[in-house]
Length: 253
Image (tube, rainbow, N blue to C red; front, side, top):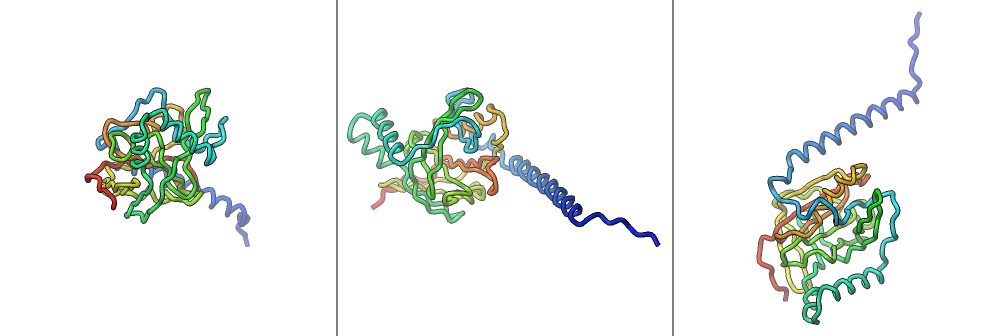
């Protein structure tokens, strides 16, 4: 009687795991392609900024020479220095701090978070230096040189998706038409999401990364832009959400 030669269980397991990984990879790639195809932003909202230089990187995972991120005292000093350079009178300085975002609410993903100053550090990519914005722990971060609430320009916010509070964990679930509410110390501002993107970032060329970075540059129109990483178990892509104001700001009591 002939006997079949059985593959050792361990080898079978390895083969099944490899096959499963390949299928999962194909599924993820197909999902990203379908998402980007069905959520193209080219006919919905124009990217601000210039793709040639002077851009601030959104990359959070560079394995390159980099400075350490700033501590609380350093970021406070840098913000103070920035404000002193941009504004001259006490009224202008007071207006800056009264119109900066301090709280964000996104009902569709049950998000209600304080907003703090995002930190920065310098990173080197292929011999070029870029400013890298670092999200704060447990809260949403504001790029303090981006637009103030109610002003023309691009108000940029970032947040972690899988560490340090995971404040933007569900940002990728936002849909067009969802509402985002931002608060300054004195007013409420309401926005409607007009575009969502998942853009490849890690392992991409410097050109692609700079193209991605256009979304956090200044704009002529009034908008807000939210940035985080994706997927949850990695950070190979960037989630970008763009929203426009839909109501006149309301003064807080």
